[in-house]
Image (spheres, rainbow, N blue to C red):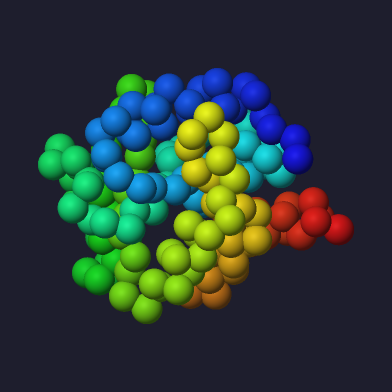
Length: 147
C-alpha cells in the first residue's frame, strides 16, 4: 500500500494533538484515508472526519453541530491549527458501520485510519442517503483503484 507522505506530514501533528486531547479511542475516516492511500490527489484538506466510540472523550471546547438537519446526527467541530476536525459518535442506526470502522484499521504512527472497504461503504451510504456529488466522485476513484 502506498502512503502519501506529504499528506501524512501535514495531518500527523494535528492527529497527534487530537490524540492527546481525546484521551480515548478514535479513528480517521471519510476522505482523509483516500488522500493517505493515494486514491485522491491531495491538494487541500477541507476537514478531518473522526469517529469516536465514547462521546464523553470529546473535548469541551468542541462545538456541537447537526449534520443534514437531523438532530440525531451530532458532530463536534474543533479547530486544531489550520485544520478543522469533525468528531462524531455513532449515529442511531449507524452503529454497525461505526463498529466496522474500528475493525481492521490501518495504523500509521499510532493513528488509526479506516480501511478502504469501510470508507467505500461509508461513501456509498452518504451517496444513497444524501446524493452527495463529492462522495459519488470518491466512489468512482475507489472502484477504479480496486480494479
